[in-house]
Image (cartoon, rainbow, N blue to C red; front, top):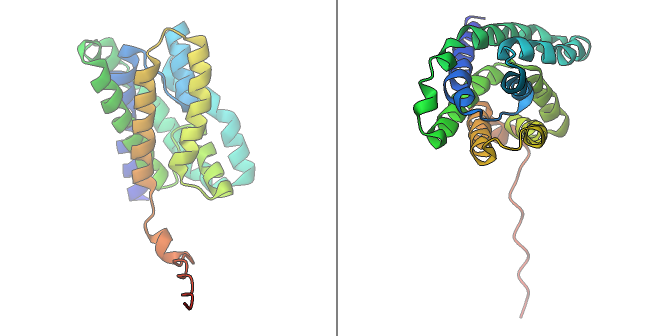
Length: 209
């Protein structure tokens, strides 16, 4: 319980710093429901945390009926991360990140967001509905959760690119790749290979001359 609480607090902090300090000043796009929240922030100046919370409600309702343990494990992560996103909004308002190199911000922001999300996902904790959806997809298709999150992010980033055609798409793509790689590293389970039935293919028989 203490380890999960620590993961929620630290993960939410890393996630919020990455988004408010590095992403928002350069209007970088992101995947997941946080990406949708960023879209509303850029267009209508909505709070990212509150919008992320509202967008995640349908997935959490599904989790309540489908996998209630995920709901219990993740609802606190959603609430804390959404609150942290809005509480640390002053990092964006300070304007420091806007004076930094956009490429550096895309990579640094991606690393922080991926570390925050990955740390919580490793404990089966979600920061948003799309992370929880990624957990469901990873179990259904037997793939790494980082790959599942990348697929969801690609769909949402495509929607954002269609609406905000003037945004730095290349920098946003670099940031999303950084998020996916770091999330995958945090959630990678090397022991799964030891538990699997994988065996090397036998060598073909030698032919008699």
